[in-house]
Each structure stands twice: as C-alpha cells, then as structure tokens.
Length: 87
Image 1 (spheres, rainbow, N blue to C red):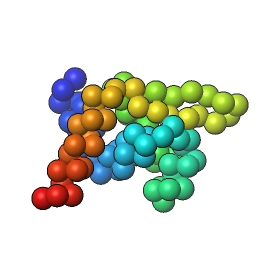
Image 2: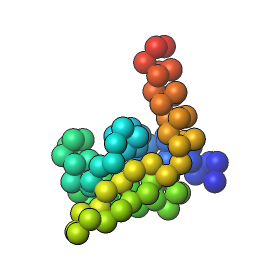
Image 3: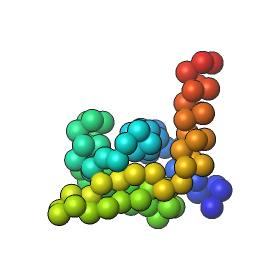
C-alpha cells in the first residue's frame, strides 16, 4: 500500500487532481475544465485514486463529486508542495 500511495503521488496529473480535491469537493467536469484535461483522463485517474482509497465520491443525479478520503495523504501532499515551493 505504501508504494502504491507514492506511485499515485509520483504522477503529475494525479497530484494536480488531488490538490484540487484537497481544497474542496469537486465534480469530474470541474476538474477536467480547471486542469484542461479530458473527462476520460480525469475519470481514469480518479478510478486509480479511488481504488487506493485516497478519494471518496458522492453522486448527485448524474454528477459525481470527489473529496479526500485519506487526510494523512493530503497532509503529505500539502507539505511536499510547500517544500517544493520553498526550495
């Protein structure tokens, strides 16, 4: 599980997605629009993150909204981003 978590954080697209999700609950369409990615790409990455139990989702009609499931990983992500910005 540890190596899979670091694998998830090693991908720039997943990091960008997790960074958005860490800020607020957000839909697949909003993620795709904000990051200029296809909905298919976002859905694929979210499925990977969901399988690792890093994100939760809720359905409202036909829209899926994602939020962090593991706050420990979100803390590591925030700290790593902060560290990289001040290096």
